[in-house]
Image: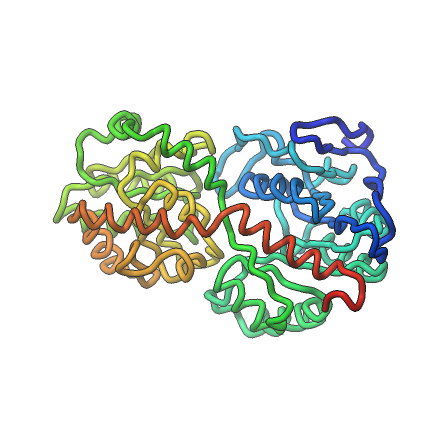
Length: 433
């Protein structure tokens, strides 16, 4: 992986697997004339399907010269995702239309970020000598990120951090102390990109000044999803039949990994309570370690109307949203955002989310496009879903509100915030703070 040269890819960029840093173009970093694109190194654990449209948009912006460094290339092929409990191979291209770098260490590294990961020293060295104006970290919980940040600052680059952490989960005191000790010096040297209101509060809580915070809202490819929604218009009956829905009763959709923190068993209990009062269906799109427990509970309670679709790839998800009447995301902890909410809103679905879902503060307005319920409260979850199940007109009105609200959470708007942060942070001294 580390020895082949860069090759042309769609969009006129280059996917470079060589060991050499991408060439620096244009005049020096402090030259005022002629203008030069801000050179940005973006560091992220592995290719993530949700972020690729954003990188392509940024690659098209004349203000930036972006290179994305991946610590691992595992997600480019089939890899085992423990959250899904299976091997996953995404059916959407993760490369193309932007410049990506996989240094030799990426061949051996596993996907995902953790403090226990081995540092990618080749990434650190390349970023340090790459004469970048800005080094943009995706989070900070990987040793490569912190090492590269230190090296970049030593070489004069500015530091930018995009993070979606929240204050919604109460951590032990010693973790809070350790986090403050880490983040105080890190944030003192950086600007922040917040993905939503909870993310902004987290940055502010740990000392990031408001003047160094820029909005870069979590987003999905609204354009593509809108095209799929339009193409599937009129295909609702066929989509429902695909998942075994046999009548016109409302479908509650859960979309995600079947793991403890997302609380699918809580949703199943709420559905069981609701199903006694009203006909409806529960479509569970996803897989994971809790699937046997879900199947056992359905069997033991003889619970009707539950359909387990299993893992659905990116190209298959639009049919699930088309089949559904509302989305439920009852997560209990560490749900820093919940991008399935963005996706569902593009299909005009009302949302029922717990108060531990990070995006609820931004995307769910109780009584307007859905409901926010206390995490773990089965009856409140059932009651909120029941209000929507019982009223088709309300579902339609809430769904249209969802679609109008998510129109502000676009790849283009996110890119605008990143460009503003990068160009301001990477400007010569005296031109920007």
